[in-house]
Image (cartoon, rainbow, N blue to C red):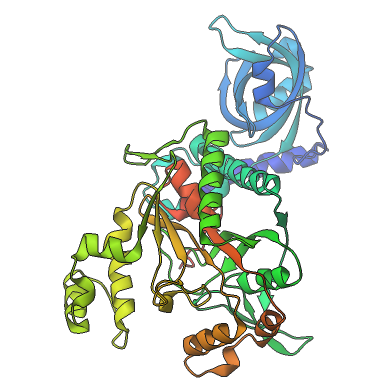
Length: 479
């Protein structure tokens, strides 16, 4: 850090001199006439503009100066000529404006002899003095975590990074537009809950001093959204932040964004149609194509209809027709040979599912609805009428990762209590009695779905890591 401190000294000295001269190095309100992109797109020679941005380059030509400024929409060259400005303003720019400073300029558009669109500056204001210089070769930094820790610099220096997050915002906006157009109502449910329910995940715990109770950051909003179905809301959704006190990896962040949506009188097939329609519409509206390019150059074709295959069929297709007739010991042996980590007391269905997640799911690149999972894996789903050992669910897998699980919701309060008791393994205090009470008042049959927004954005933008699509991902503290 010491070299940076040395580079800061002359900038701090400039700041002090500006203050001595009665000039505020951190400006104030500056009314821009338009964005830089708009100015470039609506070029008319000698048109007056008032623009603001960060200085990314600075070229001193003696009696004139050229600089590039950049805002959130693009970059433009500015031309500062001694004869066009008051003497004090030209010297102020020449002596005190550094790379990284934020300035506002007023002037006229023109093109240079080289054809470069430029603003001939007639007046300027220093809006923010950067006392710490920008890195010279930011994108070449080998430690990518540095880019995540200082995301603000990542956004300044790397146009493709900024574009990813602008696309993310558009994707979320299109999701809302699609669901609103289908008659769904957006709602908000508690992020702090007395019990962490709706998913089998380790929660973060906190304490509410005024109430004197422990609370959990939600792992899912599911049980509250189902209360709304009981209350008569028939089509609801929430784009929510969830928190799970688990591992960090290329596909996992402890704080993440989910879309949860529920439709009364629907089922898991209703959710299939919704998922397929939503994702294809978003892709077409944001990217103008249903062909998604992966980071390795391969393509994912989102053109419907998407493949549907049962969990059992897929396991037998990949692991052998006799898989479900093999003894549990053989499953464990094969799992070990595949490098699948298991707990010593893991039941046989968890062994198969661990192998599925490790070896089968990553190979599903084209959109695939994997349906009818074992009932033990999804305790909140409705059993299949023809085969009660499985439930009416699907997991939508695209590009080798689960994008959206969904199912026909279980609305029998007696069976639901039995399922939750089994999941709690005798810890009855973990049961959400308020949810079960609501269910006992009658919840209509429904389809429900959770869609990982971060993973969806990863897939659509070709990002390699979830940290590439979360502005401020969770990182280990610096030592």
